[in-house]
Length: 182
Image (cartoon, rainbow, N blue to C red):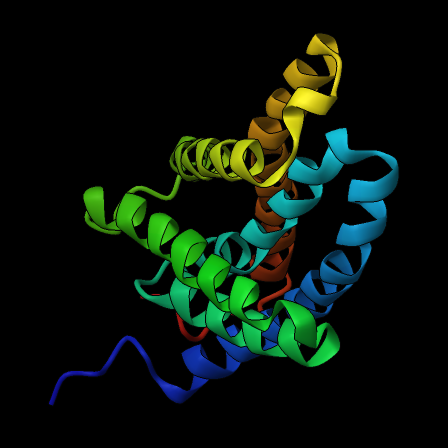
């Protein structure tokens, strides 16, 4: 009998990562309106925080499906904290987790170097920039602010990816996922 990569330990690790990052996601949900009202050019950067569940889970475990599972748990937790954003959280979880899983699958879940994570962060940044472009009234901003807005939307997920890699590596060094890695 072969062992499933989605053992109870893997699922519990994903749940713990999802809860921790879901709290951050819920906070990001509540600060969205004030950010858009006061400093809208940083909204894409705030949205980029939603890459954390998948990055941390993949870096800590180096296993398939952990990004998507962690994202879904994070979305449920964030939805409990900021209920008005439930559908946005769930859509973001599927989209961001799906992109992270797709990039990992393209290298057959064998390449875990930082460059691979940054590719998914960049792709998510492009999606965020596109979403921000359509969601925000960029025409109301000065041309320089429009440019900064879009640059921060692309860079946000990349910066959050670096933070997620650091957290995931720290968890791995602490032995959190030692018994579940293949």
